[in-house]
Image (cartoon, rainbow over all chains, first blue to last red; front, top):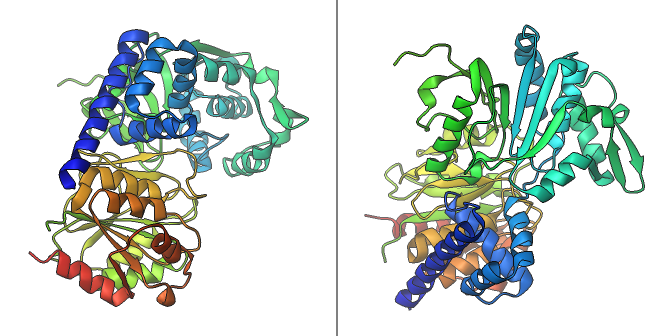
Length: 283
Length: 188
């Protein structure tokens, strides 16, 4: 019995590898460096909801049914997010990083893997309240055009408003969260003033390169989906995209610690995973 | 049978149940113990500190991409799912709640079943929902061992009962006997 089971698992793993190869060869999206266990769950879940019998069947559909692939892509890239998620992070950013940013004449910020935009707008609100918004240029990127479109719209479900309001206050919000949106039916529409300094663009962390020099890079709860090697590569990309002495903000369970670029960063705020690119490191 | 790891899932009443089990595990225990205890997203690490005082093994929060080592107790952090990778490391994700829970016992058990296969022991303790019963079934399907806390002894019997209903459990035991069974299984 055990051999049979092991065979099945091994075959599944082979099929997943072939599926990811097929996606890469056909469409250029590279999921091969993502966490194996996570990808397997997403693939099996998709099979379950669509009644697809095997991973090989899914591979066939991926190659021959573009619409199917498009929805699978969205499946692979939608990440759960909320406005002012981890309010203590925003609070710490306000009190420790903002004073330093205030000394810069101009600020460039990159939200890498911005998903549906909640984090981007949260930062926009914070920057406005701290009087920094007008001298900032914000780049919000994601590899998925569909979520990027959602991010551009800035329309969210009214269900989450209570939680967002709570988060906003805990994050040190200086006004009232309701100042930044208007409600319409079962949605909230964020104030279009928040969008003025934001450029939304397609960018794939796995396959694309440096596009500018930044003062702050946010990439929170994206790296957890990558395996170690890919995490290292992406942190290197961020290193190359950061001005000396400037900031990288990761998710609360993420770290630069085990990556090949660790020595180039100093820990600025340990608990909030805010790192700073060291000045002039000579190795 | 050569077992390699233990995964434990608990919810309501789990803190005390885990204390009873962990405080009886000797410090030469030969396997890792990986735990999902349902916990509020805003919790701090009091649970880790608490167990460290009660248990002779090191108890720590499971970290992103950390290599799993024998004789250490890993606990899933609040508001993240804990997954086991085939290369013996742990991953965290922020996927939607599973069975209204994050961390979810099913997510831990299912990924652990893939990673450890017949070398896995799965334990379901007290709890108010049925998170974990699908996971325990998968552990059995992969040739592993299934232990469930005797519902009569549980603060909340929903989770043990759901697990027993869903799969052919190997042992239904009270907490002390679960400790003894684990020690017996992993005796060198």
